[in-house]
Image (cartoon, rainbow, N blue to C red; front, side):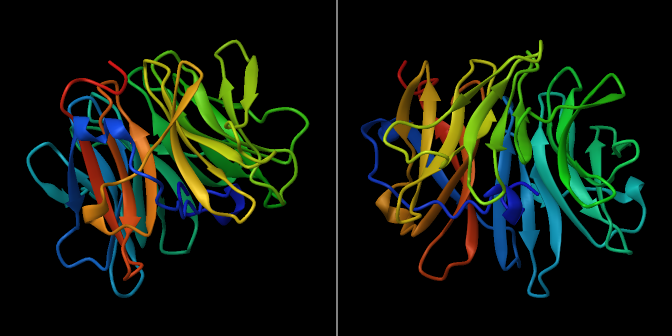
Length: 301
């Protein structure tokens, strides 16, 4: 799952970096779900609604969201009895994509709509499907496993599923899709490397990207907005990781103010107004969510 699947190097333990000068353009807030042991935020839409998950002391995760008024558990009652849940993406219609684990331990994807109805996301013939992204057109992206347990990438457009594994590689992990159906994620040529960030276009063409100064095969792309700005991370030779924003092929570091005391920081999603959400940990090493709301409409404007 996003930021949890170990296979995709999405265990985003991202080291805090030097605070960039543009950080003064933001107001920051730490987010903790009441009574939770940990809180992580994964996505924010243009209405500044955001979603994520909380974990209790029994290590049980539950999807959460802020509807613009309050932080609350996400109502997934339409799915029936479930054990755990996560919310990974939210569009401007308040459609929320994520995954849940049923009582038998099987992973399933879902899209929950504003009227509390849900679409079950299950790749045909696959198992352990997870939905990582949903755009305003209803396109859903995510991963599934085949009968041998090998992971694969998928796209669902108007109810039709399509495998979107990139060629000549071991693992393709799509993490975000914008309204032009451009998809970003992580491409691993072999399972033992982080790999490269990728941008997959609607016509099937794609490009692979390593961040500047990053070692080869150490970059992943996490989020893309409708302005084609990309959040991602890269890992140095000591396996320290660095968050970045890629804007018009230029890379900027992402970090939290020193007042957060963050020893681990992850930037997860950027919306069209340059608001960013993610999670961090202080010396306790227990995750907390964070939001950064732009004061002036965006970085570099």
